[in-house]
Length: 140
Image (cartoon, rainbow, N blue to C red):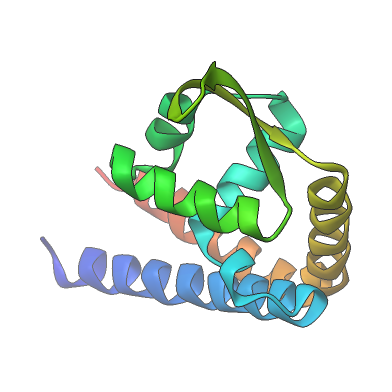
């Protein structure tokens, strides 16, 4: 890989990490719950809000977690009152549907409002990401 490509990708990683840190800080400040600041928790909550109820398998594919990892994440979100499980066989968590609770919906609104407040500061980072991407596409 040419040095210029390496530097562009390194810059890309720095920018993505900075955006991620800013989003995490905004969510942590708004929610006060560190369990809600992980990328995977945000993925699950936002997907449930946007798409509606989902099966654990779909959430596992979305997050990249194993079945056991997904179960652990869902257990934590359920303990916080963010999601509920419906259906399935008593004592068996397979075949269930995961739904966002009213408290979960309210929390997603708090999260999005907090991130929205920080978007102006992140716009420069996002623009730079776009410029890096454009420059890489223009190379032979």
